[in-house]
Image (cartoon, rainbow, N blue to C red; front, side):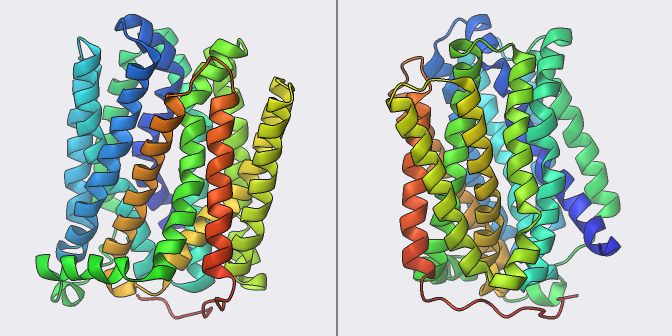
Length: 403
């Protein structure tokens, strides 16, 4: 494995994981927060939805700004804002204050989510970018694998408020890492033509590109299906199936391992078969598994073992879909990579927030609404993949690095 490539992935992955850590550590605490702040499930989930919405909105700003001023300054600003929002959450006296500061926290978190993708595009294209993106996701996997378990432990030792103090410290450490170990990949000469007018023009270019739009919506509905699981899994696995917060964290980690493990094969499989073919094939597998899981549940098979086994297989397929479709979406927009990455990230989180909201309206204490939302997203991603990638040639491989 290329040491330089892994080093870049380590730094970018850790920065990317800070925001999701605030999501995944938070999940085991949702039932506890609901009781402690005397609220209901819908309002407790709203604190998760506003975080997603803030991340989606904020990326529209951070992406173009990173094209104008470079990649590092927006990361600094975002991490400081995230830390302040985390402190506000930790001290929130009621659910409404918590929701407000979760929004602030989300506005800061999105810097670490959108800009690393742009940095990947600054550095590489083709299957090299796919390999770097998958390595980034390997480091990023520390969040869904360890964060729920860490959150469960923090809840036991310091209550749910301790979760937000923990992620505030993580943001400070991320700030130090960004300042000392991250190199600027957007040189001054590349920023000359980047301004507010060019940012608006860039969004116009992207919104008129049906291939780009198709790819970001494949990615968005794939991510949204995972968000449906994120928002509802603690209530389903803890309240419906009776798992403890610690066992919930272990169960959540199993699916994260499948997702991240499969993602590591995207570079090799993309090089051999082409990224478009890889996305088309993987999304078929994902949709078949998730629809089968829903049909089994409707037929009366309400079994935790079946649920976990099929989610494991399904999220393995999803681990091939998301990094590959993200690389393909950015492939032809290197000059506006920050803006293209921003729109991609925004659509992921806005779509995810909408899906969480829709699924939340049908909650009945069982797994069925969650599974219906996941299956619906997988089918939409399948239709989009077949329409977008059927006649699309594979991108050129082995392109020169930008640096």
